[in-house]
Image 1 (tube, one colour):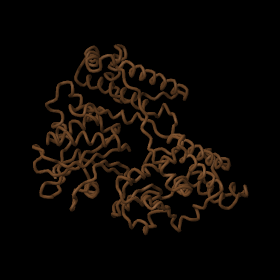
Image 2 (cartoon, helix red, strand yellow):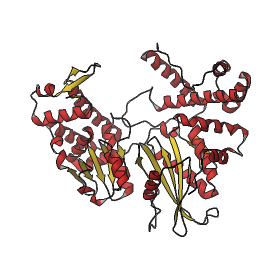
Image 3 (cartoon, one colour):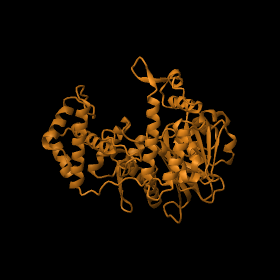
Length: 494
């Protein structure tokens, strides 16, 4: 196995570029500060003799990661074809595997198939599938990993790369898409993140110029040459140059203890105004929302009133296993489930494809709750791994014996089930509307729970006690459900 270290990779990717791109070397060093989401690039090949080799990696890969990739990529064994693109999670890091079959390539004469693997901190299959395809096409065309690595480093450090055949790849084109919850959050939104990334990038440029011994005027001239009308104004550039030359090291904004929430909101709206002005001046196309996954309504239609079991399991943070024999269908269905809980952020609990291998089982068991996908037909017998099993092809939902008590349905559940089925069956209801209506129902349940929060912690947080639930003399099923919901929402005081 050949591994490209950081130093070798920088040489291969940067030497020979025009002078203006030497900034890439500096930004590669900065990428270790946590701002980059993409972490590792791996590559393995199957040659014409059927042997599978782990050919190179940047900057490194663990033995556990190697084992998982070789198991998932499908290059080993008697495979006549491979799954083009798969993804999953290992150790709080997402892996994206793009497999390519090689036909009549002069630059790869002994390669039959290869798998390109990206490891990243964010869950964005569309973004990384697009990037993987661009990198894979480049490798097929050139046979040179250094050329592919140059594009990869450009995306890691600058958020974009350009090729003659595929045009320009912009990471922000994918990150700017809105989520399905419909909530607006300027401070934490993708536009704000993009603006802040631009600020950090330009500050890094100023700092780099200072390291090269450039004066304030020379720095401003270089920024004008690089950014044109987007460059900071002369006074702003000089102010930044003066700060870094005086000893400032951080690229982030300095903390302002007196800043109020209203001040922050005003600042974000000013930044948003700058962004819109920039978009207009560059004649950018209007930002498009991600096409919503229409499988949410299909999920409800497929399981009918029993879809309330999926909703309840998600709400109570149960361990859910989704089974489908087709890997492509499995990945699509598993990804649909979080849309029912749009009030919860992140995808740390999502495991799109899990094999019954020891390392993956241990990874799964380390999580208290999850949504995991499996193609193993024997998964139904592994009740130690699930509370609820959703068999998509059979249209069956199984509640494990140990979870039945906490999954008892109430009148509220029946009402929500009927409500969801009616909405999903209506041609006038869009996917976004369905998701928002489900979110509203969830909010009603959570609001009902919070009315029972009467006990204060030493920190002043209101919590729900067992006594406050029992004082309401609720039906046993509802009493039980609210208790389990309080546990799921970390509101129970035992």
